[in-house]
Length: 256
Length: 49
Image (cartoon, rainbow over all chains, first blue to last red; front, top):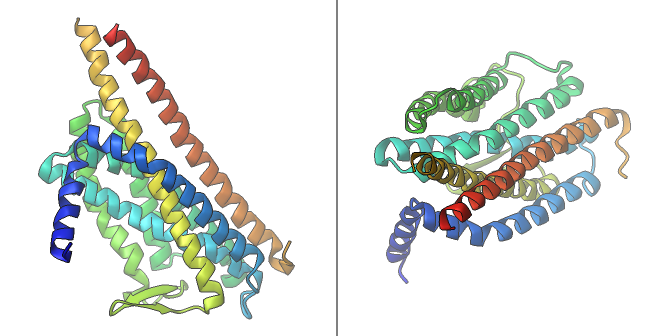
């Protein structure tokens, strides 16, 4: 199979997931494997990082917080981008599964943001001498957290599901600015306490700004957090699809 | 158990908060999934009956 036909096959399969029935079958098949991989990667990464890595010369044992802080921050931002993509698919193509996936991603994305903020504050106290500072990256992360809360609150506030999907999608697009800021603030706003990115990809090559002794378990933790996010996303989207079907069936029952 | 030295409280609380939040959010998703699965099954059985 050539690369071009492979890409074509991927896209045609991807669009088929917009069909709730196909999505339920596909996700039901993959979910146990995703959960198994999540448990393996997350436990291995965190146990390796916590028990089998040395202390940092300057940061001492607080460096072990990196295995929680960096992966959760990564998923907080990527989770929001996923919401934006799902919202765009809804606004452009009116695909219910995509906006339901966006809705399902919000609680876990909000939790990841909260973990990043909490672990950052706990790490900041011994290293910077303060739990909080109005640094560009910290502030943009706080605003991102507020956008997650606003997004979820808007879903709850509107009874008509299609109208709620429209309004939350627009809100998600507005919040995308802060997701971008959270990701890139350290690159162009050199006035904060927060360090630069720990892992960067330049010219398609991974550039490690930390020693490999810390990087390897960190990478595993990042994969583990990503898989956990994906597992909860699948569970959440399946629930939202079921909730939508339940609403239709109950309305049908009431009418007859 | 690794020797965490003078930062033991910070490291332990960071791991504690993270695990607590991850457990809460996982239970939330799982519980909601179970509730809707059960309710949908009941309605579909009534429909088929």
